[in-house]
Length: 408
Image 1 (cartoon, rainbow, N blue to C red):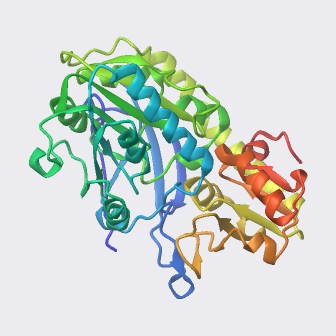
Image 2 (image 1 turned 135 degrees about the vertical axis):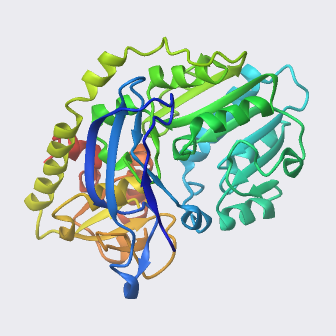
C-alpha cells in the first residue's frame, strides 16, 4: 500500500491562508491498518498536525494523505451493535417523519454507506435508496443485501448521476464520513446540485467542542480532515447554500459517542457568509487544548502503571482504541485487544502491536480489568460481558473516566 502526504497551504473551508497550531501527535498510525505478526513494524506512521484557520477558525488536519488503497480495503462496521442499530432506526424515522413525510416515496442517498444498514431502515419506511461506499468489501456486502451501492469516492460527481440511477435526491445522509473529505466545499457544491428543490442534508460528525471537553485526542486521525462544532458547521453550510434546520433531531440518549448531528435544507447559495463564528473566541478556546491533551495522555499512562501486573484487556478495535493506545508510552502493559467485530484472526493493532481477538477471549482468558474504549456503547458492553463471562461491573472501566481522572 503506497501512502503519500503533502501539506495544505490554504483553509479547507474558506480558502484563506494562515493557520494557528492546535495539537501535534507524533508518529501515529491509521486507525484500521491491522497487520499480521510477520508484518509488524511495516505499518504507516506519521505525525498528526492539527491547526485552526486564522480567518474562519475551522480546525483541520494540515496534511492531505492519499488513502485510496487504504479505504478500498477498509472493513470497519458497527452493524453488530444493538445501540448503533437503534440509532440508525431512530435517525431514519425522524428524518422521514419530520422532513420527508410530504413525499410518497422519497429518494435517499447515503455517502459512506458501509454495509447498508442505515439505508435498509430508510427503505423499510418506503424510501428509494442508493449508497456510495469506497470499500469494496462493504459495498459488495450491501449489494448482496439488495441495497444498491456504488463502489467509489464521493467527490461531488459520484461517477455521474447516471450511475446512481436518480436525477435528484430528497435527502442526502452521511454519518461519520463528512469529516473524512479533504475538500468539503467541493462536496457540498455537488450535494447542493444533486438535492431536489427543498431537499435536506443530514450530516453526523464528531463534535469538536466535545472532543476538547473530553480531551479525546484519539479522534485526531490521519483519516479526519476537518473538526467542526455548531458554529463552524453552520458557517460552512451557509457558505455552500444550506440553512441549518436543527442540531437536535435526536435525543442525546440515542446519539453515539460525541455526535454532532445536523439537518440542513437546500437554499440559495450565500458564498462567503460567516456570521455564525466569533473567530477570536474560537481560537482563544483552542489555545489550551495541546496542554490538556498531554495531561490526559499522562493520566492514562499513570493508570496503566498503577495497575501494572494485572491482566488488562482493551475493548474496542475501532479508532478510539487504536489511536488512544498509540499515543501512550505504557501501552505494553495492556495484554490484548478485543472487539465484537474483529477484522480477522492473528492480526495486531498498528504501532502498539496488541493482538486482536473476538470478545470470546474474555471468557477463555479472564481479565482483571477491561478498559473500554468504545465508551459510547459502554452500558451495552458491560451488560454483555457480565452476562456472557461473569464479569463484575467494577472490572469494566471506561476510557473517559480514566482520561478525566474520575477512576483509579
